[in-house]
Structure formats: structure tokens, C-alpha cells
Image 1: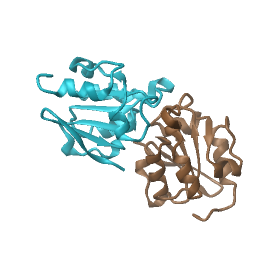
Image 2: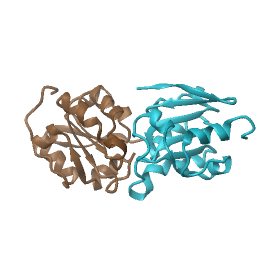
Image 3: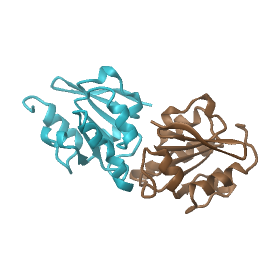
Image 4: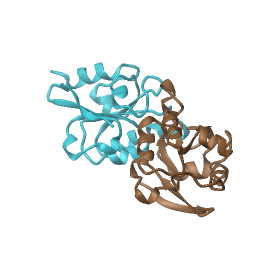
Amino acid sequence: MFRGVVETVGDTSVVVVDTIAHVRAEDAGQVVMTGSHGGLSSGEYAGRAHLAAVFFNDAGIGKENAGVAALDYLSGLGIAAGAVSHESAEIGLGHETWGGVISALNPLAESAGFVRGEPVQGAVRRVFGKGGR
Amino acid sequence: MRNEVCAEIAGRRVVLMDSISLIGEADVGSIIICGSHGGTISGAFAASQPPRFVIFNDAGGGKSGAGRAAFALLDAKGIACATVSHESARIGDAEDVWLNGVISAAGDAAKTAGVRIGASVRAAVETLAGEAPTKHD
């Protein structure tokens, strides 16, 4: 199960974790890419640290939009959050999320400059890169 | 996050576990209904404390069928596994899987034991619980 920093953008590290259960307090202020679905249980794990942003796999969205339910939950905690399409990234693999295409965003992530339909890597580099914020 | 025994069927504990990352020693030989997707990493968590049967959410299948990728790993270890449709149960919510989940796919061991696509989770669990013990019991 992978956990590691894959890139530094400006002052922000991109931390890849296959499962959001492995998020740590030290990830506060960083961007996390997880292979986990964006359901409420994942939101609980993600909310344990004040992340700069977190991206999940949308798990096909599914019943009652459960695959992205964490996005609203994290809005309430002041955390920008989004998801990548389950057709663009293999669920369970953080590296795949990092290579995925954005399918859903919470209002905080939209305000930060993320856009649905674009690859998450380029978006993170733009939003968190020099002059991006 | 929910992690509790909800029933005992044919002497086996049925555990509702919102995330398979919560699995522990007490879960060996049990029947686990989890809210997690059935990707490889979920299979690895499950195999660490081998249950009799584990049911995941199929996460819509997705790229390369990743939402069911755990089957290969678990079947290789003789652990019965299945998924429910992501349209039948909320991902991350084990109780919804238990009450409303519809089986969308099953590993070889589960199919051999009689688990059928389209069955309710309760029916699939009763089918498995009635089977003979495995090497993990």
C-alpha cells in the first residue's frame, strides 16, 4: 500500500495514498491524492487533518451520489475536495487518482480554480504553483 | 464509522464495517459486509485477517474493472468474496449494503458455494454461512 510525496508544487507537497485511512496529521496544509472512494467514511478519515485539498475516486458516483458524499462533508470543515472519474483512474490506487480526470468538486475547490473535465495533475500545478493562489 | 456485529448466522458473526481498513484479529472466519470498494487494496486488507466471506461495493466497475480487482487475490487464498452494485447500496455505508445491496459479481469460491448474481446480500450470506468450513476456520 503506497504512501509518499510524488511532487512539490510551490510550497505544497502532493501526497499520494492508496487508502485515505493512511492520512496523517503531518499532511495538514498539503494536497492528498487517494485511491479511496469519496464516500462519507472516506470523508471522516480525510477530515482528521486540515488538508489544502484532497482528491478521491468518484466510484461511479452511484446510489444517492454516495461516491462523492465526502465533498460536501469536507466543505463543512473548510477543506477543498474533488474526485476523479472512475473510468479515468483505477479505484484503490493513489497514483491513478493523480493521473485522473476531475469529475466532481466542492465549492471550495471550484473557488480555488479547479475545473471539471481537466486532468487533476495539471490543475494542481496551476492552482498551487507560483502565482496560482 | 460503523464496525459492529449485526447478526450471527449458522454460528458465524456477520460484521458491518464501513471501511475494510478497520479489520482486526476478531474478524478471522467471520462474514464481513463492508462499505469499501473491491479494489486490490481492499483485498489486501481482507486477506490480512482472513474472513469466511467478504462483500464489497463494486464502485461501478470502472477502469480495468478495478472495483472488483480484489477477487483474484482473494480467490487465490480461498476466501469467498462478492460485490454489490454501486446503484443498489451507498459506497462507504455497510448497513446499506446489508439491507439493500444486490450482488453484482462474485469470486470463484463464492460462486462455487452457490452465491448468485442478483441475489440479496442476506441470501448470499445465508448461502455461504451454510457451507462447509474452509482452511481458514
